[in-house]
Image (cartoon, rainbow, N blue to C red):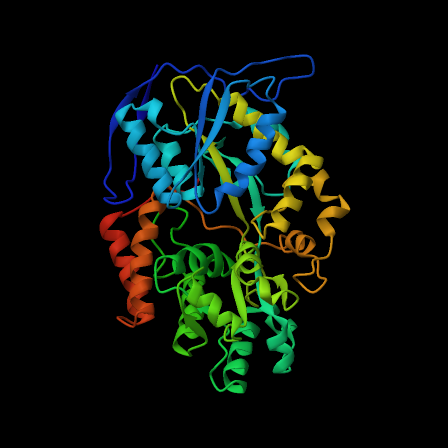
Length: 459
């Protein structure tokens, strides 16, 4: 059977590669955990996974799971390959797949919606619809939204995390400011002004990264969906420079920068943590992922931090859009470990006892973890326990609460991987002071039209 690789976007060139990849793959998309009494043994070898972030902590669960399941995988080992990020993981798979070097590439990779769609378009990812769809009612609302493309599911959701606001309660007590004022985006900015005035400019509301991650976090994940903004209209036309929601999002970011309410500092780097420790950064916006980084890098600030849902724009009335982390199975001609990874994923989401054991280990190590996406597990009191780090507040319970009244994510198309790079470059120039926000947005529209033109219409 031959499958057409329609379109692959490279990490460095953004050029389109068209090629045909010969494959004779059986349809195993419905294979999942065997029923009681059935057995399956997987061949000796290594199941390779491309991950990014801090995948070594996920591997603690994976390796322990493998030892518990040696009956079905007596001579299998797992190898997690640390990649630089989403784009790097995608490019490694794309390059090997294009060359037909299936033995040299990962069996599974961590990915995100933009890259997932890009690879699904090229036939690189396995269709998992028949395996995942029957489980939808057992998962939190929206768990499959970002792993679905054109009616098919290409990713196994690992977590569904809300957008949240982390704040230093000690700073708010010192300057007699009520954190509840940050319930709205307008209130959030006003709090920044109060902090600036009361501290003589020493305390910043938050931070902003001068590099590409500002679009990723403040833009795509944060302000844009909260403002109900659009990059494309329903017909696929570029509207980022005309859309009222986009105007609201970029105006908000412009205010934060022009009024000097944010510290220009690289995200997740030592200088940012040092400034935070000195009391110069009051909040961290936007993602729930900040939990793992402040616990690990600011462990000496235990008890000072609190958390709340992301601020909402008054005129829109929606909290932040949830972010789905996922793993995808590469569509190799002979996917030896497809069934094994499906079993692993299933147990990670539905085995309450082992998920709790792993989570407790993560807490002790100040390591990353997220709430499970299985509704039954979330009912357990364990996921509502108070946290000493957050002064007795239950971070896990607040993480679940912050998923309520969520905004919809930006529509992701086959062109968004390229669009992200075009948009980010212009935003970086604004933060550097090389152009105004008005010029940045105008250039986004101009360059998107010149390099992409139009994307697929909404179905």
